[in-house]
Length: 217
Image (cartoon, rainbow, N blue to C red; front, top):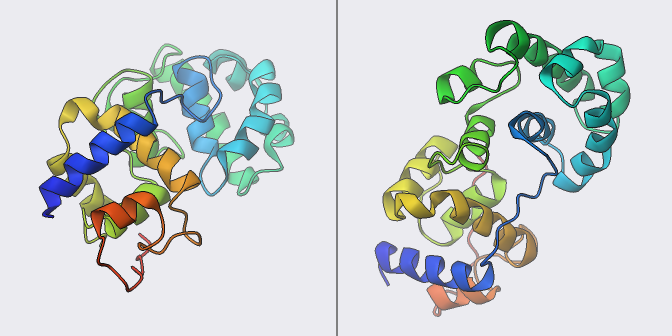
């Protein structure tokens, strides 16, 4: 089975298994999604969802968040990894949105990636899920599965993203990146599957016997 054929099988199976793709991070609009994704760096979505209700109650908009001081923001997210850095970035980001973008979340990759604590992956999630712009955010799950499934050599997140965009039709990107995340968390985990265990890995590579050692980005 060549790479293109594997991509078609993956798309078909994930569409069957995950017809609905709710965003794992709780949010109500583009601003709260942006903050939630920023907070999720090196942290689980579950943990982020535990702390954001109180944070968003105190700062539901960019203006309200900007009115909070950094210490108060930190008090709401102190359970998260890198809490001090994230609190500082959220505080600065809220002020920039108010002062530069009229309180709105910008709708371009360039403007998003210029915000404190916002990298390409975070910008891609916001562009895809808040604004419907085709994007393919690559997190650890997607990077790992792209290697296991022979879709990318995985030398870098940038390379993985480019490879996946070249294999899958653009109209599927926004949903597919969530489908791959769901599958990776449920069936093809770092410890639970080595490229020979889960149902999809076995279908793609029925004769594979050696584990796939994935390279972290």
